[in-house]
Image (cartoon, rainbow, N blue to C red):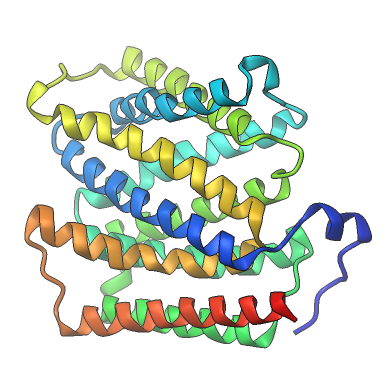
Length: 302
């Protein structure tokens, strides 16, 4: 498969460090699974627009620390306002669709459907980023998708369920977020992307609360209330760093590991024990990601 060649400017600004990118995205996926676990707790107690506020307010804790370490607000760069607006809009829509899906699905099943995102990222990275996706990476991504299908065990009516369609919509929106992140990773700082994203969530969530109302905060689930934002903020930092370190189509192939973490936390918090079929699918997914990592590391060393 061929794509258009990247320009010399693109080659100098977009570095590809697969090992570093793999480590960063793995940490991000653990945090994502923890954030989604907290969200699954919260959807039974709060409207989603209120969860947006929790997600944003507590996510600002690690973001503000990052801004402080970088030298304060004067270091923030907003060279492409459309990038910040686009990421925020896609992020809001992603959380609405995925958290709504979590009301009706187990954590691991919702995550499995959402893992169609790496395929979408790989596809979009060709026309939108000018990246070259080789046969080995395409093959491993396809194998990873087979693992997702194995876990879903689709029936003629399986993916027609509204909750599954919501998770699929969230996957597409998530893919757009990562494409925007990679495209503007060199011009926009991590601090600026994180700050604008969460501030937009606070504004939108507050407006929706003013219109549709809100539920009083329950202190019994305060750990989850804080966790959905704190883990979300840490996830964003490591995810942006991962997409800055390596190509989007490569990083997206390792997103599949989120299924494994979703299965672990689903078992810990809700006793959702993955059966043999799910375990086989998760193994296929993980193996595909590790294969891509090995290939890309070997290429980098040559």
